[in-house]
Structure formats: structure tokens, C-alpha cells
Image (tube, rainbow, N blue to C red; front, side, top):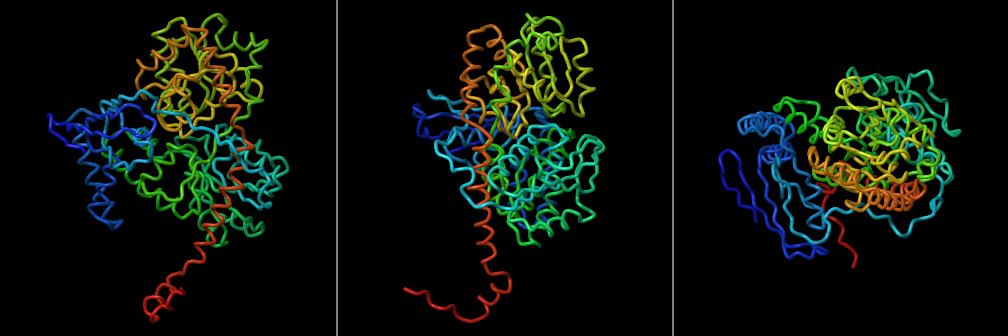
Length: 543
């Protein structure tokens, strides 16, 4: 039961639920300071007008009304609620209409057992080659071969184990760089014409204007098409799948609405962009036979905006490449990462350097703990801006590292920090954990599915510098706790590997997509439905 009451310009909702199974407290309360969020704006527009054109008009009006409300109440910067957290409290998925709005005081829950739990591995797995070999076409942008990111590692490992299972994969991707490979482990790569974004020139996308991808697919005749999203390539790819009558699997790697909210700063346009994103995404993704989300939290977010047939693509990490063993004889690396002061505590960030990663929060940590050093590994569009931000701080920028250099950087750190609240999964966190390094991460996105709070690391309130500082200080001040959490983190990652992830992908999830595809094509089309309506009485069902 929720009863809003007016208190100035801010509505306050008190909601009470019965405790779910596993939580020993008899009940818990949620207190929210509320203003219309982008999710509520989207739902309200759907209620006001069911047609898409009318919905867009109502969405625009509601967006500007919301912006005015935000300005009036000075709540422009308050944190938006994390609906997946509410679902976790209930022990099952909760529709976002249950808890809406922008949040000032986040969940106040009295429960004796932890609410947030990292995703647990399955006890039994199918054999890698349990199902017969397939011809798999992977359509991906940006390219996983020269673009450095966690998702590129996922695709390369996926291709490696698909090949081991006996599948015949090909890759279609845009890339005009001079060092692009002709193949990957003998698997052919077809390059299509692409374009680069003005504000992010490191990324190349495509809409396949030359139809080269379609011609290659016609020659190859795949059994399954796997398409990476979001991006522009997903639209022609889904059209090609329909034309060729091939099951389509779409894996979703970047939560567009979070990026739209972060990069579009004016409230009116921000609400409009997020609302339109949430309107368009289901229209595109629901054309696929299966959608793969990279974390349970992202799965819930996609379902909340109307996406169907969404499953979780299991995570994985190579525990041989990322291992505490690289810490042996690692003094030179630590010397470099601490700028010649290896005895000082070392914090490490690895990842893309973009403003949505909230890396600037780490400056507050350095101010609070002057003895600490920070190493930032990676590159991206915000690199120059971040170098200016940390110009007078004890920070080392290494640029992009790979191979053994990256493995040694992880193993040399005392604490891994991930301030981003927009991670759909966060492979760098898994890599740090596999290296035996405890992680301090924002309690947002897919990160809670990786880190057991207070066991393998700490989760802090997203955007809360004080909470981040407190969690980092706890680890840096207790060497025994760091060692204990690092060992637990390593033990956790040993349960996850890429072979298991690919086994579930090819034996269960690709099979699921094929079954849904067959059912869809057995269903009557428009002509069949008209015949049912106007073609006379139906035959009686047999007893």
C-alpha cells in the first residue's frame, strides 16, 4: 500500500511489504522522495495515448513538465532509483510501477540477511559440444579485434569456444584501421563500410550501405545470426535475418538510457531522449528470437520497458591470464604504477575513459587519503579532460595495456576501484577479482552480480563520494582484510570460465532461439488469420 502525501513540492511515499523468503525480519519499509522519472514519464505517455504518434507527442509534453518540476524543486541531480534493487528485496522481479520517481532517501530496509547477492554459478552444465555443430554468423560493431573493451574479450572468447565445439563461425564487422586482422583463429572476417562518431572517433559503426553483409550472409547461409547491440548494425541485421529466414539472437551490451541521461544535460531534452530510447528499444529488440542481457540487473531493466524473450548471457573470465601469480617479482610494475613509491597504497582503475564512468570521483578519495596512489589504465574520449582533472594529484596514466602487462598491473594493486554506475556487467571487475584484488564498486548496473558485498569486496552508494572513501579506507587500513577478500574474490572467479559460458550459449540459448523461430514461422500470417475470421467455422477439437 502506498499513500503519497504532500510536503512542499515533494511527494513522500511510504510502502510496506511482507518479508520475502530468506529475510528473517518480519517486514521492511521503503521511503521515497518522489518526482516523475523517465520511467514514469514513459509509462504515463503509454497510458495517455496507446498510439505511437500520440505517445510521442504526450511524451514530449510530459518531458518538459517533468523538467519544470525538477527545476522548481531543485532535484536535478538526485539519484534515480534502481528498480532491480526493489525486485531483489521482493525476492522476484517487481514491475517498475511499484516504485517510481527520483529518489532522495534510498531503501531503508530492516533485514538480518544481505539483500544483494552476487549471481551464483550453476552446479551442472551441458557438455560444450552437446548439440550438433552450427554455422554461426556474428555481426558486431564496434569491432572486437582492434577496439579494446570488456565486451571485445567476451566475443573473442565466445568465438574461440564455438570453434572448439565444432561450430563454423564467421564475423562481419566495420573496421578501416591499418592493423585489422584478416581472420581470427582461422575464422574469416568480412569488413563492411562504416563511419565514426564525431564525439567518439575511436568507435566505428555501420548501417551496411553497400549491402556487403547481406551478400556474405547469402553465401554463408548461417543456422543462427548473433548480433551485438545497441548500435546501427542491429537494424539491417534483423532485416537480413527475416529475409534469409534465420533465427536472430541479439546481445545487448550498453544501456542506452543511462548514457542518454548522463550525456544530455538539459533536463527537458534529457527526459525526452531517455523516454524515446525506452520507446524504440523494445520495437527493435522484440524483433529478435532471443535477447541476451549481460547481467540480471540489465535483464530486469529491459523487461521493465517492454522487451520480451530476455535471458542472461553468463559471465566468464580467464583465470590463467588474470591470476595472483603475476604479483611475484612484480616490483618494477608497482614501481611504475606508483611513480617510484611502491611502499604507498595503490588503487587501480582499468577501463574506458569516458565521463559516464565517473572517474573524477576518485580525486575525492585521493584528497581524503593523501598517502594513496592511483593508476588509471585505459583510453577514451575523456582522457585529456581527466588528465586535467588529476593534474595535481598522485596519479599515473598508463594508456591502454594488454596481455601480460595488464595482468601484472592488476596483480600489483592493493584495491581495484570502479566508480561507474552505468556498467551492464564490468569485465574489468572480474579480471581484478581473478587477480586476487578486492574491488570497491558502485552498487548499480551489473556490478552487484559480480561482487559479494563485504565478502569479495565492497559496494558503495552510487555517486556518494563519502561512502566510496569509507569503503576504500576500510580496505587500505587492514592488510589482513585485503588478503582475505582478495582470496575470496579469486575463489569466486574460479567458478566462472568462458567454456561454461559458451556451453550454455550454444547448447541452451541458441537452441531456445531456434525453437522460438520455428514456432514463429509455424504461426499463421495475416492471410491465415483473416481466413480464420472470415473462412467459416473452425473444425471441432478432437477429444
